[in-house]
Length: 163
View: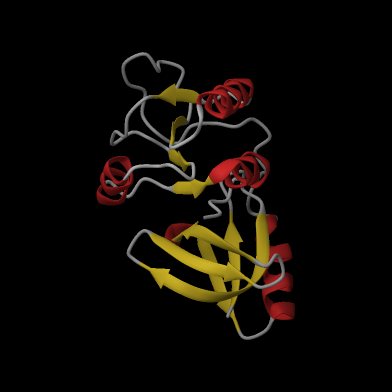
């Protein structure tokens, strides 16, 4: 399948993917060219095409409709302690030193740190020791999640949820 997708920075790209699973809000895919699993928002899939070439050409045409966002902004409402409307992130299942490094990176990239999963959480980052409680709550609330340091770094770089 060939998708045209707009990420959170309004960058429109073509993808060659195999669908793994999907629900009303998200679609889990295997990105063939990057050899990794990604999670996309259904609402950001702009087109489905019959070939990569068609998807690529469509992505170029559609990009003209979207101004690329340079500043990382928050699509969520402000809430207590987050009056600047920053994207909220929670880290779970990491060793203390690794978690501290991830939190520093999140702060440097303009994200707001949360200790628990809430309805306003924008991203749950799961380490290898993540417990099931936060993951279950995140699934129930449709909170996007990424796995590990690489998944978080990819999110910072591309705005995509790679599991």
